[in-house]
Structure formats: C-alpha cells, structure tokens
Image (cartoon, rainbow, N blue to C red; front, side, top):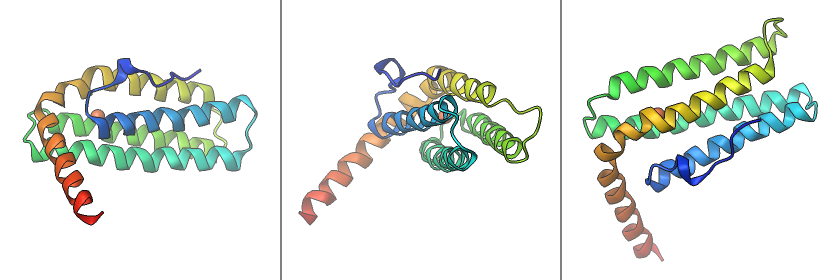
Length: 148
Ligand SMILES: [Fe+2]
C-alpha cells in the first residue's frame, strides 16, 4: 500500500508541495490498478503519467536549485536522474513481461524512495529556494491581477 499525502511531507513551498501531492496521487492510482487486477493498458498509461510527471516536477526543483546556486544541486540532480532511470527500468520490464518484474515490489520501491527523498534531500534545499519561489508567486499574482 502506498503512502497518502499528509502535512508531514510538506516543505512549505506551495508549488512543490502541490507537485509532491500529485506524485503520491499517481502512485496511488498505480497501486489501486494492481489491486483491482488492472489491465496492462491502464497500468501502462499510469506508468507513463508517472514518468512524465517526474520529469516535469524534477525540472521545477532543478531549475530552482540551479538559479539559486544551491551547493548540492549537482548531487541532487544525480539522485533524480537515477530515479527516472529506475522507473524506466520498471516500465520496460513491465512492457516485456520480464519474469524478474514484480509490480508490487516496484510500487514499494517508488513509494519508499519518494518519502525518503522528500523527508531528507528535498528538505536541504528549502532555505536556499523558498524566497525565490515566494517572489515568483508574488509576481505571478501581480500579473494575474493586471489581467483580470
Ligand atoms: Fe528532489
């Protein structure tokens, strides 16, 4: 069973918290699909959603870390790249009906990785990027209020 999003996971940066919450929801869909013997087409669609969303979310984090010269940026990016590789690895094994592929094990891996990553590594960049996200949000609010 995958974790449910809760306040303990929050970083206090709304855009990233929303993205993390979304990640948990996609993972939850994968979990539900396996529990209801979801057909392969459904599972494939969710896998691809997960890959796309991870790429999108990691790009948001990496852009913020790079723009703010966060010292652990390179290291953090390697962690992201390895994780994406791991999801692709699961996905291709799933597609090929590889005997070594066990969906529940891969879901457990993804679930444990994201919790550990948010609770340990993501927390390290918060002080370096939170003002930047705050200003970004503020500028966005201003331009939205001009439009309306
Ligand atoms: Fe991250």
